[in-house]
View 1 (cartoon, rainbow, N blue to C red):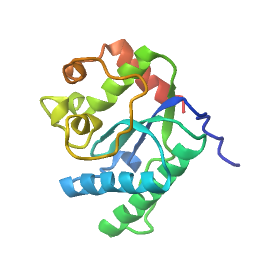
View 2 (spheres, rainbow, N blue to C red; view 1 turned 30 degrees about the vertical axis):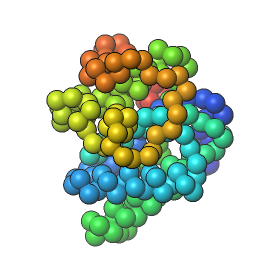
View 3 (cartoon, one colour; view 1 turned 90 degrees about the vertical axis):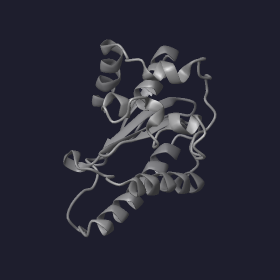
View 4 (cartoon, rainbow, N blue to C red; view 1 turned 135 degrees about the vertical axis):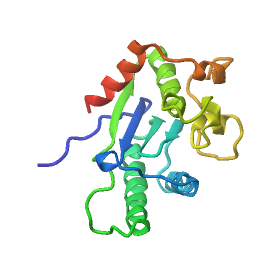
Length: 189
């Protein structure tokens, strides 16, 4: 039976997440995080997409895309994850031993400005929420670090513009109802 299509029409904004199979680590050393972000840059050249936020964690990653063409996000993620999975299996000497990712990416469309800003905060504060840093800006593998000038060129123009004091706002906890809304919207897909 064929998979159902992701309904990601042009000009929508979508939050996407995927994780390692069985919550297994995908990245353990700094070099592995860096290699993945280099793959993101490479995949963007082959399958242009607009990325407005991202965060790469040890066993999962988040992206927020501003969709330009209906199939570009799926093509980009297919190229990114299959290449990453192949390299991951070669590095761990586990070629042929099953899935690297838990499955197809989960996507949730963003329908309001409030939800959009909450989603960006949720993504960019992921490492802070996990207790890995004292401030979200200290996590090197996120769009917040890129916004502050880490030299990467993954991010594209933001459709709404970020409010003043964004870094401080990201460090503030999201209310449980807002973070719960984001998590539950991803579970539907």
